[in-house]
Length: 163
Image 1 (cartoon, helix red, strand yellow):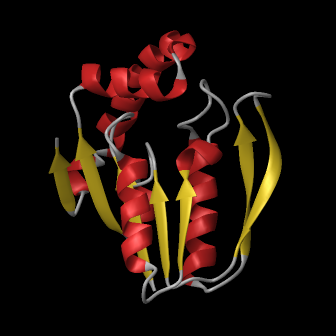
Image 2 (cartoon, rainbow, N blue to C red):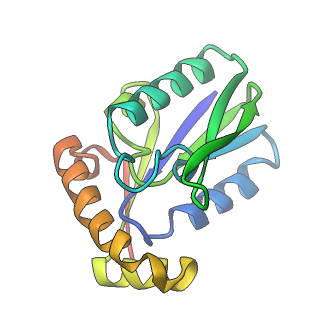
């Protein structure tokens, strides 16, 4: 049973790395991936205590080999409107901003941190998700920097990848 967290600023390539890990590791193991974008409660309330509680519930369920359900956030309707059930698996990968926070690290997760220049990260996200979210993304960059500073996520990463 292995827990992997892939964290770092928006646009750093976390989802791409998670897909590579899933592809490579699923040859000999059962693997599930949870995307933090599914767990956030919108732009303003994303990196709050409620998210930490969700991650704690996920980690407890995974480490006890239990089936668990997560609510999925719909960014178009700005609400949680669906669910995903996750069966016990050999490997769980949690990827996204906040994935490597203390509650996940304390569970024995291997944490990967991806670095990126903020301006490059912003451009990657806008190219992927559309320029109409630029104001939200600029605020997100401030919010994620504050979160990382208070959590010291990068300092506690097992592996740091710079691009």
